Length: 165
Image (tube, rainbow, N blue to C red; front, side):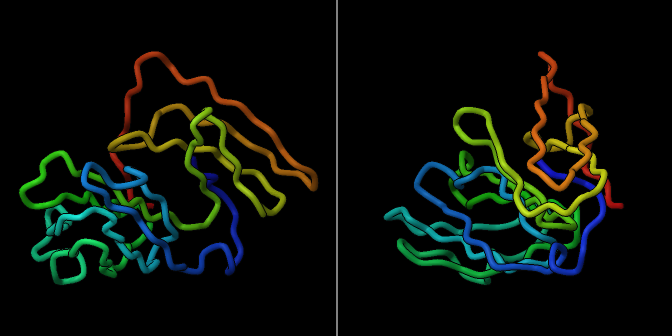
């Protein structure tokens, strides 16, 4: 979930984030970050993984990630999605989704989410699903008090490819 709209300098400042990697998956499989942020991939498994970004030469951080180790890399510009994979482990896939601001959240187990410290203004709630944005959006007017909204997704989820703004 991402609120697309006005932002101040603080909301657009790159940060530091840690993406987990186990024997069976990246956790979470879709990882939103502020564009340009540093991202560590932390290998919590007992196996070394040679993590790469599809379409790019080389491994994430330059070397395979040993058991219990981490490697640092950088997220690209806003909407430049990085599709992660691991050599010899086709089931290990993940996405790093760089966004222009920190106004994003991932869904909890119960399907709820919270985006905090959003300034007052008009935003568009956009939803990333697997490999693209859902066509379903919602206008959200953030006021001085907590704003709540709900989204009902269509039965058939169609995505649009990511677009650079």
